[in-house]
Image (tube, rainbow, N blue to C red; front, top):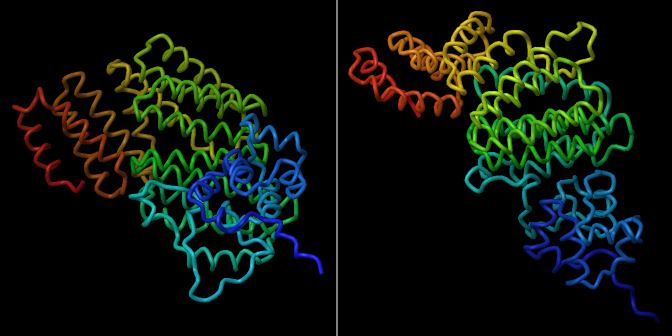
Length: 437
């Protein structure tokens, strides 16, 4: 009687190894394959055979010369090496056995977050199980429309009130979509689900960015970027890179911001970026140059944005997520870039005009732009006007859960230092001390 053959997957001791858990959570297949070789004796040819890859491709991954981001390949690796789906951010695989009651092991989160934010932001394991079961529901066009509609509603509510309260729901839906994506074979449905997952990951990153939790935001933006690249959507890649560029600007990393937005412009051009999209990206570049205090480059980027905007045609096939970039947004962003350069005389009338035309429902945007108007007025030594505008921003900030808005107001408070003998400044500072946050 022959000895039973060893199971084809990785041994359980390796799957429980902290290094392997971390590598799987990050989808670092270079480390995963190297750990399989060094700790379980799974050689290149076996990895290739079990994962339906060529040996040369496995070799390139092992050496770090190639990354794996395609979801279908990730699924083949999970099945070939029998890595439980939850370790790679997938739904439970068909070969996984039901859990024995009482033997539950903790799962790493699909998307890793800052330790301080993870417990509140990431759904629990129980919710993972529920969503994994729900993922067996057949995807229909109605399912896709419902998911798209919910994203539109999330963005609207984020604009109006901030994203703090939305985040658990968005992350839960992101997990749900990732799960049904793993169980969906229809190519057109998979493409749509990839796009929905990418947008949910970007929205999650945005809510963390607005909360000034930049490390966690970058994690989700990177996941969104990975999903967009997996489906070959260069335009959405540009969108995510633009988000990362804006975050770098907030972190005073001007050089990084400029590099990221130029990569976004290259990605957009790959698919013939529309004038509206290119205008938005040019303004993001202007922000980077203004942060670096480069007058000439900032004005060149602003002129480029205006040139692109004038070429907008109603028949352009703009992606939905760039529709927000209208004449009012171009005007206010131009004013902000000029204000960042210190050109308050040019910035103030632009921001004032934009605030007159900005939708009343966009509370967070109005709070930001009121802060910038107050700042330019103060630079022009219009102290009473600046305090009046900052008071309006303070009222708006009280209705919006946005630490970024709060931070801007605190920065403005520091700018008031030379004017603290003014009665209006004393009154405004008293209000700021009483404000939450």
